[in-house]
Structures are given as structure tokens and as C-alpha cells.
Length: 275
Image 1: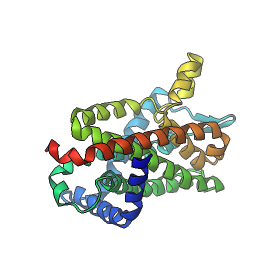
Image 2 (image 1 turned 30 degrees about the vertical axis):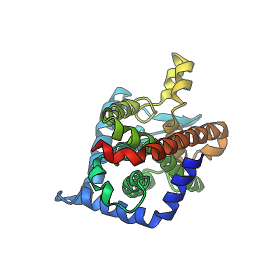
Image 3 (image 1 turned 30 degrees about the horizontal axis):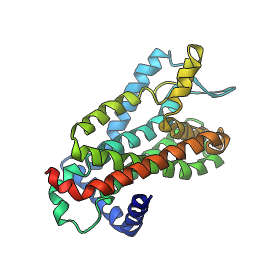
Image 4 (image 1 turned 135 degrees about the vertical axis):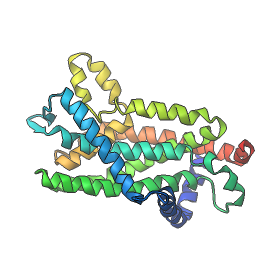
């Protein structure tokens, strides 16, 4: 608990610095590309089109039933989940290597190491907000208009950020000690794309094994994805309707954050030794 309080205080105290470093991070990542930051939108767009073509074809472009009696086009359903997935994937991957990739500059820093994963995540957060705005525009053009349920985006964006930061505290520490952790995480997340309800409705497994469906729903990312879709399609206050899952989600996040904080604070004095 003490380590978690230390990490939280460091984030609050250096919040302005986190914002400045995250803006620099975005510019630095795209400085050698002619199209610059446009690639942050182009790459996800290409992936969405590929997944829509492949999985839409497998489903014969049938609509997806999101609530009883309401079916939506597969491309809209896919977009609603993928914009969150790409944020989660990129921020988690970059966050996991954020510390060991900056080891040589650690001795010159005058700010706590715990803000390193945070400003890396923030750099992806700005792009996520832009992608979300594009998705909202597409939804308006395809007949799914803005509604009161959009307010829950504030909650789910905050929840997604907390989950990613908690995971990154753990993985950035372990990756500094054992570099293979980053590679393992990358492979695991790629597999997770197919198991988190982004590309296909996992509820179709109910016909074969309801137990497997319930196990897959334990993935915290599934909770967030369904929340995004509930907001975009205006179906429900997802975090209230599924309050038991909300409690479960925050329980997982708190455990991850406590463990990640303890791990980070314990080992960060020795990070420079891993150069």
C-alpha cells in the first residue's frame, strides 16, 4: 500500500511534466516520416479494413446482434471495439519497454521513474481520442447518432487508462530485469486480440460451451470493449447494468496496481545496474 501511495503522489506531482513529455514523445516517434502523425491513423485504418474483409467474409457480412432485437452492421461493431484495442495494445507494448529503452538517460533524470510508463501511455492516449472522434463521425454518417450514453466514455476512458498503467508498471519493471518479458507480452497480446471480443462475438460460443464464454468474459479488456460499444450504439449504461462486472474490473485493476507499484518501487533503484 505504501508503494502505491508513493507512485500515485509522483503522478500527481509531475502531471504537467507527463503532459509535456508525452507531446514530445509523439513528435519524436513520427519525425522521420513524410506523413508524420498521419500514420497513427493510417495504420489502424488499414488493419480495420483487413479484419473487416476477412472476418466479415467469414460471417458472410451478417449483422451482429448487440442486444435482443437490435442488429448492427459488422463494420460498425468491429470499429467500436478496435479503436479501444489498438490503444490498449500500443500503449501496453510501448509502456512495457519504456524504462529499459531509456536506461542510459536515467542517471540524467531529475524526476521519478514511475512517470516514464505514464507519459508513454499518454502519448498514445492523445491518438486514441482522435481515433475515437473519427469513429463518432463515422457512426453519425451511418445512422448511429450521438446519445446520452456517450457520457460513459469519460468513465471507460479513465478505466482503460488505469488498467494500462497498472499493467505497464509490472511489465516495464520485469522487462528491465528480463528482456524476454517484452517479447512474451507482445505474443500474448496478439493472441488476446482474438480472445477479447474485438473481431467476433464471443457469445456465439454459448452454443458449444457456456463455460468457455464466461471464462473469456473475465478478461478486463472485454468489459471495456463492451462499454465502448454500449456508448456508441446507445444501448445501456454498461457500468451500471453490469455492476458486478464493474466491481470485478476495479478489483483486478487495484490488485495489479498494488503489485506493480510494489515491484516498481522495490527494483527501480537497481535499474541502472541492468545497462
